[in-house]
Image 1 (cartoon, helix red, strand yellow):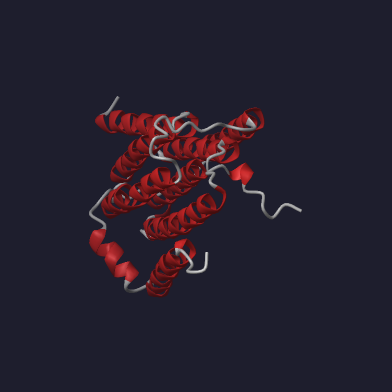
Image 2: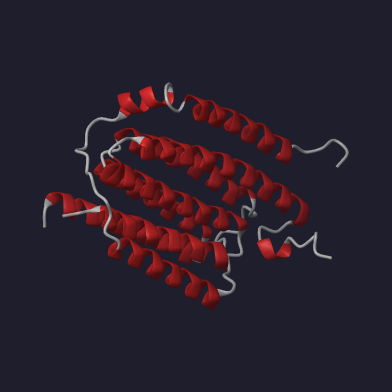
Length: 101
Length: 165
């Protein structure tokens, strides 16, 4: 019988993989992909709680807002990455140190 | 093993496995295509959870929108003859420690807690979701549309090429 815990563990795995990518990748687009993994794991959690614990659809509504925020985030994030690439000719985050004193 | 459990494990393995490829692959374009399978897997999990509207939204927005945008990002930040598109990793050991520790703590919490459970039978949700959006959650719904508009304008503003530059 598949219960709430199964979905929570899958979501925890997604979240941890996202954090791993966030911490270890140098490429900015790859970091954005990792952020998408993290947002997806949060959405899975919300929908699982909505199905197994809450008894109403609030979690699904919140997941839709999560998707909206993800779309806005990736649009602005990519705009920043493209501007950075135009400025410095590199997609790597650790070479974007213009503000370093 | 029931049919539901079998389908769940298939989707769980697809989701987590392709997420691992996204994070660990050294070729950027493989990461982007693995992300496609992660999004499909999550949509499958939504279907299993009885969230049919959300599964369709996931496919339309993530696969149709966000993934295409990310692919544009991959293509625009690399030279076109740069075929293998390698990316390196930094700080692999500390990152692994943090990620594995997080996973152990989170899944231990999820498994050991006895969750208050009132399961609902899966039913079509689209009508009810629409009613909630235009009723109880009307203000957040409008705020979300304004947020999307601002993000759209902001993104266009940021990437605009200035005349004097």
